[in-house]
Image 1 (tube, rainbow, N blue to C red):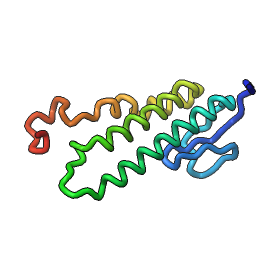
Image 2: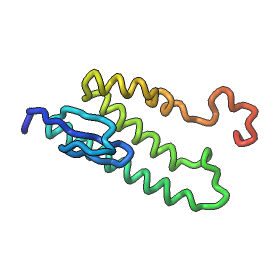
Image 3: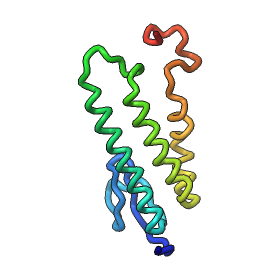
Length: 122
């Protein structure tokens, strides 16, 4: 297996990994082929959850905060960012830390403190 790291340009929002710069790239990461393959699998899982969430959006009378589909998407998105954080360089880590996305996405439950009196918290 090739352990040489190559530069890849990642767009989480577009589920893209490319070896040439592109306008939608959010991250520039040095990865081995194995790391790139693992990230590709994670992005494919995220894409599948995105499709599942989209399909559920058309079901009437289903409150989004009581639907499990968005939670599955959030879990996969956290997994992608956590993996990028794990394999990324200091710049990538600082960028993800600056987004403050990992902590926020891990605490999306509508039952969190502050929602106690919400009419939607039933």
